[in-house]
Structures are given as structure tokens and as C-alpha cells.
Image (tube, rainbow, N blue to C red; front, side):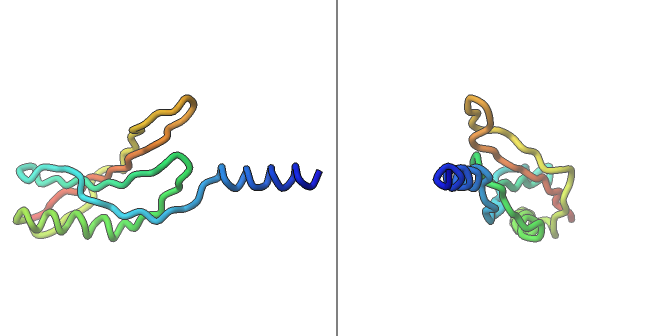
Length: 102
């Protein structure tokens, strides 16, 4: 009985995943439109922890290389399943858009 309880506990811990620090990376956008997209990836059992300030910094740096002054967040995060398993998503891309400001 103790073995069964220990096995169930370990299985539950493995399936709940863990909070994994994630870094935003510039992944797209348009210089002419003044839009920067920043993203990060999550695996099946990951619960990503990100910093909104770090995302803004990445976007602002990209905007500055394009000749803009800074960036501001626009819209909400988009979650896109990149790899679908039999019952759930195995890999998800989370993307946030930023608008470059003059």
C-alpha cells in the first residue's frame, strides 16, 4: 500500500509540471508597420514564468534598431499550439505584439 501511495504521489508531481523561467525573444514583426512580435515556447508540462518588463525591453531594443524611440504592448498574448499530441498540445508558442513609438 505504501508503494502504491508513493508511486501515485510521484506520478502526480511529474504530471503537474514545473514553473520554468522563460525569456522573451524577438521573433517577427514589420519595420514599416512599426510592430514587433516577441515569443517564447512551452513544452507539454511546463508552466512558463516570464517578465513583462523583459518582453518590453526586447521589443524596445528592436524598435530602436529600426529608428523608433520605444515600444508599448498592444493586444493580448496569443497561444498557438505548434505540436498536437493525441489528447493535448505538446508544444505551444506564446506571442505578444508591441507597437513601436516615434
